[in-house]
Image (cartoon, rainbow, N blue to C red; front, side, top):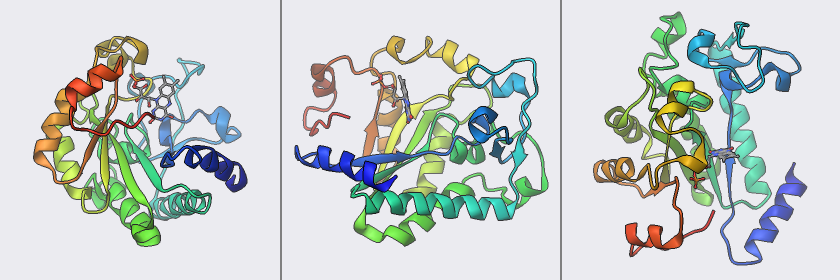
Length: 248
Ligand SMILES: Cc1cc2nc3c(=O)[nH]c(=O)nc-3n(C[C@H](O)[C@H](O)[C@H](O)COP(=O)(O)O)c2cc1C
């Protein structure tokens, strides 16, 4: 992947842009279609009614989840680190770890995903532990040679999910390992979340994450980025008159 990624970096840096890339692991939300029929892995099994069908899946069929044990957690963290190193070798100056929208780090952190009371749950009781270990391992590898962003759902929107107050507690446990926290919202493909947010992105209320981001910014030390339904530059300017606007 490195040659193609580095061509992308060249194309961005040529115009003076900083190059950042998102590293994501979908965990239990990944369709077996993309895994050569293997079961998606994650911290705990979830009933289909909670999990929500992955796109195009037969909704009547229970999704088999490969529940991670300690060895698989360690291997997965190592693979994240290797992915970040490949991005660094391709020339990216920043990496964004996807911990939002119910992806793997969020599956460990979120009460919505951690419904089963299992041995690993007791060992990994601290739901922030996976993200803390992951970000510690990445930071140890790249040092301050790369900016490290963490994308998080400021509110998961769903019943039983993480809401702002707990998200703030979670961020406080990782903020010494990252340079920027990026506020998004919700859980991907979750019917309750889609209904609450009025369907998919194009129909979201303008700036629907800003209140949450402002609350979070007051409670933490590191810079805060926020995404979501900025309809034009003026809207962003109104919000952040002093901010240097970066177009993603
Ligand atoms: C087609 C599509 C694909 C997306 N893929 C990702 C993704 O891979 N990773 C991610 O963090 N967000 C993804 N998002 C969410 C966007 O990054 C962004 O959070 C969302 O679109 C809200 O911002 P907007 O209102 O400016 O579009 C995707 C959104 C859309 C519409």
